[in-house]
Image 1 (cartoon, helix red, strand yellow):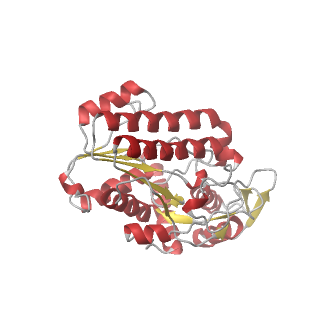
Image 2 (cartoon, rainbow, N blue to C red):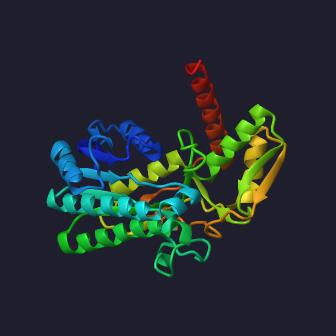
Image 3 (tube, rainbow, N blue to C red):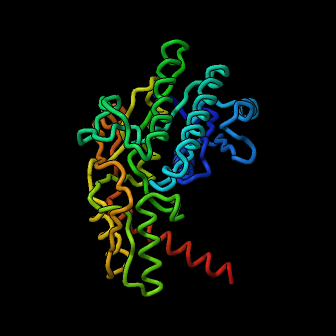
Length: 320
């Protein structure tokens, strides 16, 4: 039986972030009107007191837990302890107090970083426990995977209804374009756009370019999360992806073309590549959620580049 989200009070942790804004917009399009978005300066979700106050103040029926401390390879290498602690403590306290407050459903957004480093491509959900994650993002990935174990235990012991989705790497308008903490698509877009604006002949790229990734447009991921909230009652891990893989070298060339950068892409092999390959099997999402990705990759990149250029132009005007 489908959960009618329009008749519920929904808390979206991370609702002011990149993915969260897309989720809230799609919830509103469905007719949801009681959507609560906790702000970090009001509720520190890494502390139990902050989570207690959140539940007391908002009294949710459904919690969509999107909030995370996350970044690209560089940020993961610099903050392994913090990324584990923050993500583990948020899930720990939010799930425990979901039980205490007897909410209707808890939805946890996991991460493709939870998969073992050398998972057979395409990644299938049954492969989650077949090895240790890639070292640079293992603390983050393990913390997210531990939340799946907790939800499974709470479902079996306490009857807490829940869902667990594993989106592949996301991209789209409104992404984080900070070069130190961003993921690969916004980082490459920023580097190429700035190189075009300055007339540079070279763009420096991390690693060898041989690693592969799969990318999902943020609106498609948001739709998958909402469908999981509507349709799932137990934390069966569900991949959200396109099933289309691209090497980082080919990705950089594509972004260079779409941004108009025609100079050299110079690869720094001294920087890590991260996990060798990422590509998901999303058949379970099709079967359980009636979900599949809709946005074409080139179209999604064009929208993201256009948004970044527009935001740069607005920032330049406001600084004058």
